[in-house]
Image (cartoon, rainbow, N blue to C red; front, side):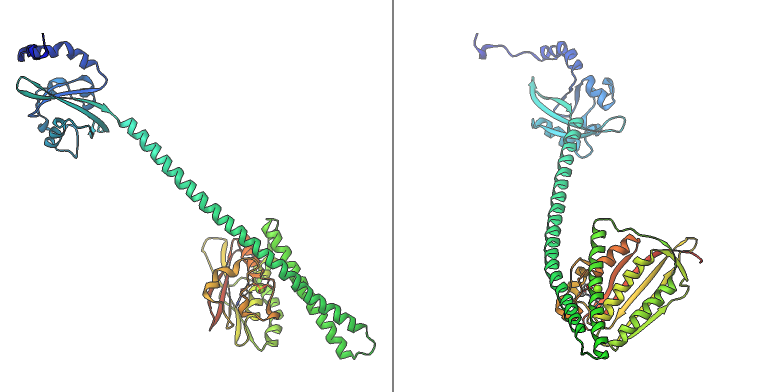
Length: 400
Ligand SMILES: Nc1ncnc2c1ncn2[C@@H]1O[C@H](COP(=O)(O)OP(=O)(O)OP(=O)(O)O)[C@@H](O)[C@H]1O
Ligand SMILES: [Mg+2]
């Protein structure tokens, strides 16, 4: 018998013929749905009923359009159309417990008698999709981390190169800077050996030798301090000390230097400035020395001032002191503002040879302030008007 001669099964036969398979469909882990092209549900297996929390009686015989069984976004008509187009698609369905599940649909249309029917095999893909999402998130996260780390490493590498260059520059400058005062010291020492020099000359030679020796010592001390800070070996020694005495000592020292340059130097203490504070007097003094020293060094006319204010926090033993050092000097160009705190950085365009230090003062002050839980910042600087630096310092106030 040829294929065309095979008799077509009757309607009744087909209806009955599903019965032997019904049990098999019922037992399947995948969800099975059979419906006609009007959306009438003819069969929904246990897995499907369990998933959507409906019993068989209430599912079978109902129309797809009666309720949004499968998808919040897809209307019943759209769902029916998609099923009968035999497309693979995914819906987002809510279980009776209110849980969102992703269902993957594979559909097949067949004709029984003159009626079109579709069978859908539906698989719950939620775990698979969650896992896929997790893998995607993890990959994205990993990519971001790799990108961030690469970026950090590039920055660190750039920093290391800059530091290396700055150190090389510093060493060549340092040997030059050491040679200049040493030559002066040697030269004037030789002059001192001569018999026929007046007392006035002798006094002047000794003063030059002293000034150069002081400069050398300062440079060496700064370098050693910076090395200690960089190697985390700098020790902060806190104790109770007189803030007023420290400021008075700074004023006495720098008043002389300011006067020599024809500058005014004022100090203003705000209200409630305590007599004694608990901090590291050497570090505090070094920071203020650097800031005031710079202000006088880079100011050729006008004035330099130190103003001290306090911010009090009621009920706390720690208060915050602010030291403002202002000058009417040569100022710092804006593109240089961020760089002044880097080691060995100097804006050489604005400096004459005798003004040049080692370029470590602000870097050391910045690091020391950090060790004291404070901060040194360049508040404003203008090449026409001068600069203001501020050093903020949290301190415990103690009576003597
Ligand atoms: N008050 C200021 N006015 C103008 N320029 C300043 C001022 N303070 C700092 N600078 C600029 O910042 C640079 C860095 O200052 P820093 O105190 O670190 O170094 P230095 O004074 O040159 O050397 P050192 O302090 O080590 O003797 C200075 O060389 C100068 O160019
Ligand atoms: Mg300095």
